[in-house]
Length: 399
Ligand code: PHE
Image (cartoon, rainbow, N blue to C red; front, side):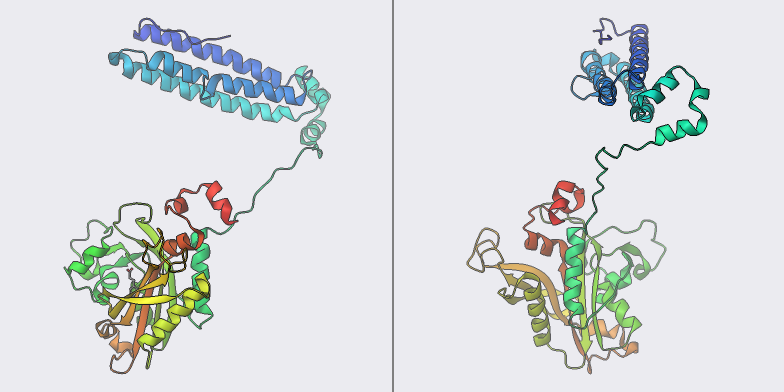
């Protein structure tokens, strides 16, 4: 059986010879493994094992021939031959891994065949098989074998919570809207009362589409930094009253850490009507938090700033881990900050005045919440990245 030789001199000729020997040995063993796979005198399991042993011998990470080539040739060669040896090793890796896959594919074809079929094939007696017979024989199904388990997927936890939030507001009579993820400066910033060059824009930096310098600033495209642009889009589409929630994906130039991701999800809310007050905002959000986290949760509203709401607030919930007593999770404050909200700024209504939004007659409130954040609290997930890695061991826990 082939063993990877140590190479004394790394001249191109020596390398070529060593590589050629490896390939020849590989092909010989590949042939032998395939022969075993269709050997009518061996049982099915044994034939499968022969194939697996062949695979392990050549491509197993631990001590397969390819690994040994890395260890004995690549790692030990002098610096000036690294490039050459690396190329040879890559070439061998390509040939050998493709060859193993080919052999396995061919072997699969034979592995389930009954001994009499294999015997006829071995004697190369195609006529003895007969075309129809042969097909039937190959397609014969052994119903005593275990079936193939195909797990059914479930909704991703972030989408699940997003739907749950939306459902809470639907039950209060809200409708559901959506807007584009690639947004103009006008909708993402200007009409939300972020004046051009205003420093508040820096708090929501994002990716801009390149090469738009010739366009007026308000038409330039970017990835939206929040779902709030859909507030204006909605009010352009329909006169008051409005009650709408807007789930969606948003983007920010935030470095990835345990609780931040440059791409995440929000649910926005907007209610506009005659006589809407801050009390309505508080009552609505307090009810929503009780629906999401349980009836014992409390809310409080802390002064904050957003250009598009006045007054603005951060809503906090009593810590769902310690019930408000104070713990590590709430930094011993008893409260957890959860979303931004406020009364719609009259300057925002002015952008849609033509559609019936006269700030002397109507008023409204808006709020925006991060879905990942709420999901992390609800399910005690401590790393936001777990949501995006697609590791089934994590996702399965939500099934
Ligand atoms: N859009 C704000 C954000 O992303 C949240 C918000 C929405 C604040 C609506 C007030 C009103 O931070």
